[in-house]
Length: 124
Image (tube, rainbow, N blue to C red; front, side, top):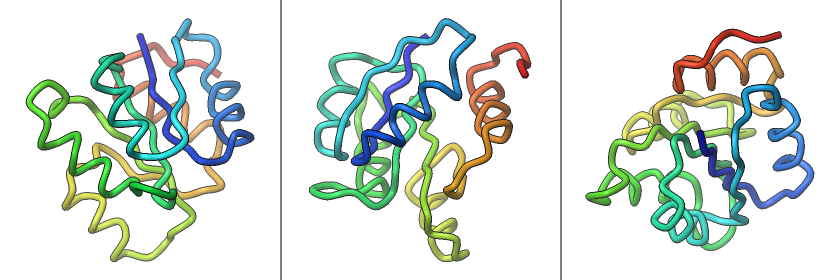
């Protein structure tokens, strides 16, 4: 299975990959939503994990673009953000996010959510 990580901070991208090791997942990286959308169209990921606050195209805009794309509209999209307000969560739901986790994300919470979305076996 393939996960596209759309994140403008390389350290966080690397951490997400380390946190999700052990399922034999393949990772593709993008530094902003615009690049993420291009890569999603080429790579056809099983899951997109995206930051919300990014340059060029933010995570909300990326999610809306994915949902309006004929080939990608059903791709699960997990939004990660430092935004903790209810309005941001509601906006995430409105644009079609599959799930919404706050940073800093707990390793077990991330693993559990990704495992549920991709129907993967539990791991510790």
